[in-house]
Structures are given as C-alpha cells and as structure tokens.
Image (cartoon, rainbow, N blue to C red):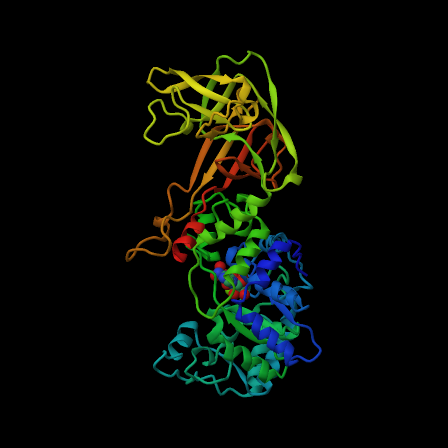
Length: 571
Ligand code: ATP
Ligand code: MG
C-alpha cells in the first residue's frame, strides 16, 4: 500500500494522462480479464547493487498503479545469480522502497521457487520440451546462428526423455563440473526470435547462494525463472523495461507449456537522465574504483545517494508521475527532477541564514558587546512553521560576493558609500575597508541606521539590495559540500572511439567549503531536516556531521534551470 499522503502529489498524478500502462490495467479491470482477482504487480530487483532513480520509476509504476486500482504489489528478489548477489543489497533495497513511501504485500524471493521451478523443468523434459545439452558455451553460441541465419540443432537435441531425466537429476545432484552441461528448452533453432532458439533454462554453478547456501548447484536462468515466479504469485500485470520485449514470446511459451496462471508482461521505457549513469554495473565500478565515496555518495543517482543529498521521496514520486511511461526509450533532462525537488523544498524547507564565503563587517556605530534578537519567519510559504530569534551584533559575516570595493555597473549590493538592507535587521552603509598585505579586503567597516530596525526606514528611503548575514559572536562554523553533476556530458556514454567512460567524470563535481558560518539555530539540525539557506540554496545535514563539526550538503542551488527550459519551449 502506498503512503500517498501528500494531497498535492495525488492531484499531480491524477492530472497525468501520459501513462499507457494505466490504460491497459483500466481496460483489463473493465473487461474483468482476471475475474474477481485483484490487480497484482511485483517489483523484481536483482540484489546485486543499490537501487537508483531508474528503479524509482519502476517502483512508482509497480506499486503506484496497483494502488490506484486497489491491487497489491510484492517485492520479489530476483536472486538467481548467486555470484553477484549479497545480503547487503537485499537489505538496502527494502530500506529504499520503504523510504520512497511504499510497502509490499509480500516479500518474495525467486530462490523460494527453486524446488517448484525444478519440478516444472522435469515436467518439460517428460513432455519432450527440454533437453540436456553437452555443448560448451562457445559451441552453443556458434550453433545459435545470427539475426539473418538460422541456428543449427545441437547433436544432443534428440536425446531420449529417460536420458534427459537421468542427466538433469545428476546435474542437480552435483555430479558434473560447472559449465559442462545445461538444460535447454526445445523450441525452434530457426526462429526469427533468437530468444526462442532453444534457450538455456539451467546452468551448473557450484556457488554458495546468499539464501539457499549450498543446497543447489544448478541455477535457473532469468527467463526461465521470471515468468513462472510471476505466475506463482498470480501477478496479473508484470511490468518491465523495453529490453525485455523480445523475451516476451519466451515468457509466454513457458507459461503456456506448463499451463499455469497467465501473468502478462508489459514493457515500458527505461528512465534515462542527462548527466547521469543508470546501470548498476557501472555504478558498482564507480564505488569499487573509489571514484565516489560509496553507494550513498550524494553525487550518485542511487536512492541512498540522492536521499543523503537531501532529495525527498515526495519529489521523486511527483517526478516519476510526471515522466509517466511510454513505449519508446528517450532521455529526460535532469533539470526536470531538480525542478520538482526545488518545488517541494520551497514549500517545506525551513529558512536559515548561512554565509558560505565569509567576509567580516564591523558596524562602527553599533554598541560593543551588545546582542539583540530579530524575529524571523521560519518559512514565508508556510506561516504554521512559526518564527525564531536570530542574534544580531556589532560584527557580522556577509558573503564575499556581496561586497565590491569598486562596484561594476548595476552592482547594487554593498560598496563604499552604498546602503543595503541586512535581511530582517538594519540598513547599513559601507564606509571603509581593511586589507591584508596582498591587497585583499578582509574587513568592511560600516555604519547602521538604528531607525531601520526590521528592515524599513521611517523616512521611506529605499535600498536596492537585501543581503544575508550571520552574527560573528554567535556563528557556527561548518563544512559545506557543493555538488555538481557527476558527469560533465549530458550523455555520459558520449565518448571517442576507445575512450574510457570515466574520462567524462566531472572534475568539479564536489567542492568543499571548510569555513562557512551558520546562524546558531542550525545547531539543532537533524539529518532528515531540510533547509533553504536564504539566497544560497537548499541544504541538509550530512550524516558525517558531529557535534561542533557540522557538515551540510547542498541539495540544489536556488536557480531553476528547468523553469527556464520550459518557458523557452513554451515561448
Ligand atoms: P541496471 O540496468 O541498472 O543494472 P537492472 O534492470 O539490471 O538495472 P533490476 O534489479 O533487474 O536491475 O531491476 C529491477 C526492475 O527495475 C526491473 O523491472 C527493471 O526493468 C527496472 N529498471 C531498472 N532500471 C530501470 C530504469 N532505468 N528505468 C526504469 N526501470 C528500470
Ligand atoms: Mg535486470
């Protein structure tokens, strides 16, 4: 059952017509294709890596659509490949699905069906529809033919049923080394669909499985396991990505030969995002080669990575609803994901003041040693978020960018003789500067107008600029991590002949600012808390934080490139 509590999100979803899967299910419900049975879906990850934003799309489809039709969804681990699978991944996948806001009806494992799948393989052998082949993997490949030439029958194809039963049972009993024999479906070596050219059903692999241990030394192939697992769970709509389209005839063949519950496979487009790699294998390589700090590096497109970066499940679900599903693969601008995230954070992120590149300002006519408190709204978008008291004193930090000794044209921020508003506090005017031996401005001396408290002057005098600040005496020092796209090209796979994918890594994807100054209320920040540092961006506390050594991640800068792209497209 999906925890779709956010009413804003639901309305976004119901306004989204671009999902042909929804139409198929609605039609099947209308025609009572499955009688009284409820809509049953499954999300079938292989536990060989962490889930990424592409999986989020599949999860939103599998769980989201079932939910819309009062149906149920199983989480099923497709664990037929013991060499690459680990309990760590099983655990992280469950945590990530729940974090996205979904709860499964049943937790299933393809490995739970190994005994049944084995029985069904025996049945196919007895029916003359499967045989044990002694050809090597290379020979099998050679016999397969090509897209333009038919394959050739294996010399072992016409073994007797008894011999096949004997050999297959002995394969299971562990009598043969890895790779020496396989069980194949007997379909058609001349089929125009390569998947139907006597596909391998079982291989011999003496490997320890993370759940079944050493119980099995033969393992079913994905195609033999998937449809039957669906059928066992009485999955009505088995939605998967387009690369399985050519496998669908095989999916149906097994189900028909076995005469079992007719689950139907329906394919939709994979999510591809610009500047982003969505392949578990490649992501694993990034982790193994330490190109990133781990699966949850905030630059990773993994769910644990973008969560650590400060993305929210609500925004990801809204994004997935907006991208919908189609029958052709394409590429989605990452700015669109960022747009939905900004929109979500704008509504609920608490505001705070933080100075990333500090420059000291001394207000000469403000009493020394005095502190006063400015009452500040926590979120102007949400009055219920209340207010807080922010301390103000004689010395404050401002952004280096907010001061220019020699202002360029149209520069309205602080410069000698110019007056600006300090957000929620006073008007100040720059009077003089102090420089270091290198000629850099290290301190700006200002005067303030005591009558402008709260940011308005009684004489109606206007200032063109409002800047943020943090009181020096009260500031918390923090490390800030600024992220850019992990890859520098919109298509990370765009490479010259023989080029290395990782040549396209963006060398500036992480910038660490070690001496940012934060308003003191951020001392109580929590890892799941979201903040808008005013004028700077959206931030969240990183789990690396310790008391007295805060670390914040920039989730996103404030400016919304997607809104611009959309506006341009509309214009
Ligand atoms: P990867 O290509 O990243 O290794 P995968 O397809 O091997 O992914 P699985 O664990 O088999 O990973 O995926 C589980 C489900 O998620 C499948 O139904 C798959 O179709 C879907 N899925 C995987 N990647 C994407 C994507 N980029 N967009 C949409 N769905 C995806
Ligand atoms: Mg897969």
